[in-house]
Length: 450
Image (cartoon, rainbow, N blue to C red; front, side, top):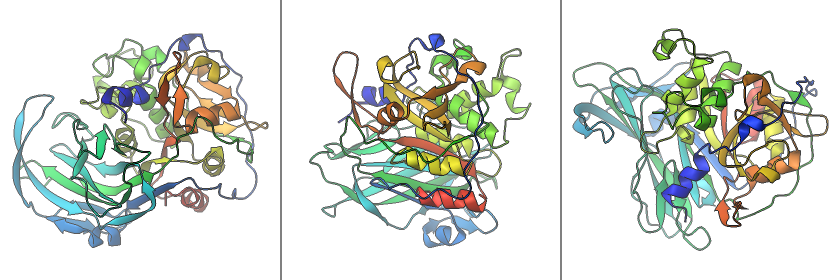
């Protein structure tokens, strides 16, 4: 069972000696005609509630479903009023609230882990709480676990995960509900999600939730993974941003830029899709700072309990605050799945840990790092935007295919001292337009996201 410290180690961007990494020349490749066939699926079940019918089928108490091109859930009338004391400011405030509880979703995969993610708008004076209750194979239930208290801004509440949750058989580590004994413990066979929407009393403000879902998985313990066969030659024109040029900036957000791999990667893809913060959004950033939008992403993905910017669902939720964007946290089964998405023009943010010698050309080792896969070379190697680079120009890298696949998909690894540590087992963030084109829709469906 991972400890809170080890969970943070997996998530944190603890990158060593990245400034010495080399630069590789840029290239552009053409996509093949037609859609790629789907890769074999891993033991993962991703399910989300997104449609008008979905919102109406849930159990609402004070909420209502809103139809339209992008259906959502809002407060219709408050169910009641409650006080919330923010643990990170000590401030107590009153809030009106309403709730929505999903139908039970029976997972196709009896799971050892479940990760929730959501897309929502929270205007000033509003926020959300996301909870999950799982059912074990023996028919008993977990408690209602808090998977996040979230707002797009940070003036009403401080967005936060909640530590110390468990029932003796499962626990929540930052953003992940895990069975404590993955080898012998009970599997989670189904779950429900509960949303609580909050607003300032006496106002008509409301959050709007467009998507809420979860990824349930049972990835086997493995130090190695089979090599996949290359199927795609293509490179997407994704902006390049270095986290390292922000070293020492805004240390209140996870000690500054050297730990900002996750928000830096998120910002690259957000801008690939043509979205970016406005000049008004960036007015708080000190003048003269290069790529101020990266500082903005760090601030607005920061988890005040975890004390870092690497909370996976918080990054996805941040991406979805931009106009007509969808986002989710999931697991993919191979680089074949990534090729399916890249083939449709959808880049992917992957999470991995490795020793320096395990990823040729990186020039550093890390206990947890996020990069953006933007394409594949004619040899099948991975073209990645690696934010752990000395400057923006050096961000584009090419990494050996099977080395990458191993460090990303394994669940067990050895650290520099020979101790066994955990790996993320294929965790990634995927961001896409809220109204995808037909090719994008087919690719997202092929990897289980639609």
